Image (tube, rainbow, N blue to C red):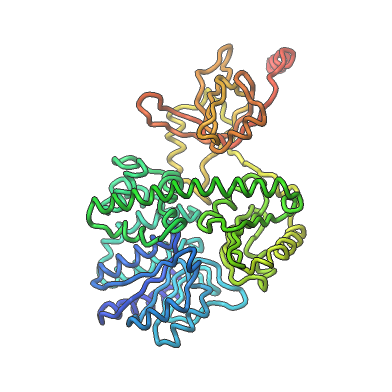
Length: 537
């Protein structure tokens, strides 16, 4: 369902693109370097080719160019004969680039999903497709960048009588939708569900190779978690650690061996990213623990020399998880500071940056994720300004993480039938979270084991009448430090919050608990048990 205004913009954009294809004009797709941006390039480039056209693309280098559309790229495109530029997952704040395109007599179509500048509006372009722009009544406001690009591809293919090809695009749309953590409701839910089903039977050589590398091949059912934690990080690694063009080349590869070579390269880059993340996080924690004035701010601003810009966004997420406060992590390089920020539910981070916008060279993003740059000598002033702003809007209670659960579920009631019933609610993700259960006073049946220095695995059981149940394995990702600090040992009693998982291993598989929280508690005393039994009778 489309609004009339959205339909007019889509029609104008598709019509101009169709004319460009018919006239053999040179088309440039201007993307971004993350999963959303690179898959959006693939989607639109493929649609153009299926309609008989051709398009070049530009994905900026994260370090050398940074985020957003740049004048020099537009100028080079004009010099090479490009007459139509289409942005994907970027462009809604590209006022200078839009003016450059207009001056050089190139048409510009902006497709984006980021929030526009409240004061400036949207750039002047042939068409702007963004459900979040002022006056747009398109019903699904939460489309990711690839989702918006797909809507343009859909209009193009429908006008060309090629709508039968649309389902083949949904695998890529689903990957972007899940990776970009937009709500899996409305149209996004349809994208995710149908795309995940399609991923069981990939045709694209690059996609098949990527799934093989992530150990997800073989006609198995994939979940949103598989995409978020095993597929998306490998795609993202290209833009974080090197050049995102490798992603477009991977999904454009026809040769199986070349596709496998590129997938292996992404896998290695993801390993490099993990090592760099560990190095930065060690430095961040050392800084916060040694500088109480920085650690006690209501909005944390942590900076360091030459931290890898491709990893600081992940670092910001990790700091928020540990300290429960909105966080900006910045890398100082040659007098400039480049940063990424993540936030907590109670704090609109983009509004916070808007409050001190004159400090920045550039900034943009969402309510809970931003990117920006500013002169390095302004970082102390930024820290003070954001701390003041945050103290006016937050209380210490906002820093306490809250894990909402859906109901109590004693371990004896967990069955394969219950698990299958829960799976009917998939796909899970933002806006449609996986059901969280809690079980109280369960016993730790085996000594907790630390996995890879940060995860924890233990076995828990619970009394069922006079006997204890056989129990379940429970895994806590990045919970090893918490369990060690709480001195949780075999024989202790704990309250746990968890989701259900199925381990498909042929030897030791079965239902498992994925821990969301674990709290040590005291066992019931004999007198308490007698009193409870008397009250029940």
